[in-house]
Image: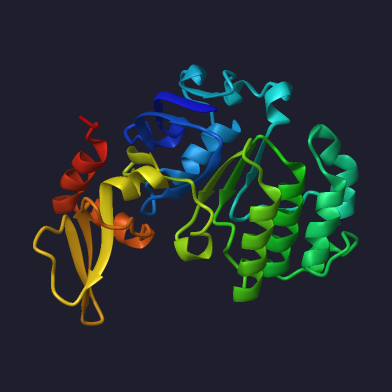
Length: 284
């Protein structure tokens, strides 16, 4: 489990600006969607969990009770971070397997072979010759096969075509098991919307929401109507119809979560408070 306790972080060259402010949350195993506007602190948070940035108090960010900022090898072998612009340190994937994978005890060679074959690769291709899309496919194939306890993905769909995105979605559903904690930061939610177990939303360096999807849809409804609903917490017009977030209607079927609508509603200053208040209410 990832535990954040009053996590605060400021970059050295911007001591007057906090990229992360007083963030407290427990992030349990599952696949978590990390949302937020540009500059919200998403990448900073991923770097802190990966141990690539160190808060003033390392104990503010713990993974399985250990501070990743201390870079203990026993913890580092359980975490892997794929950045949006990750560079390959070796000329081929197979060379990466030979020199890097031994540091990850859970590495699954057969899974890597399957993942690479899915993309028409064998691991001996020179990485420098790859397009951006093929480079991204190769590193995702490798990252999934490492089978780390914590997998951090920053915009994994960037540079991928429609077919590749579908293949990545399929591989993630095959390769990730219920014991792993995966945090996926993306602005293109539709690419992976079938995978998410929970939503983590940041805004201006603060945690706005950290909640399982099942709990969200038990508290609010996402609807599309021809007329604006009178009791809408948030509403927007879309091609002549009205997409809205409503308080849960007792007795009606659960609606599918609309991640984009939820994001827009929570970014809207006038609707954020009412949505958060409803989501935070405890059952009587």
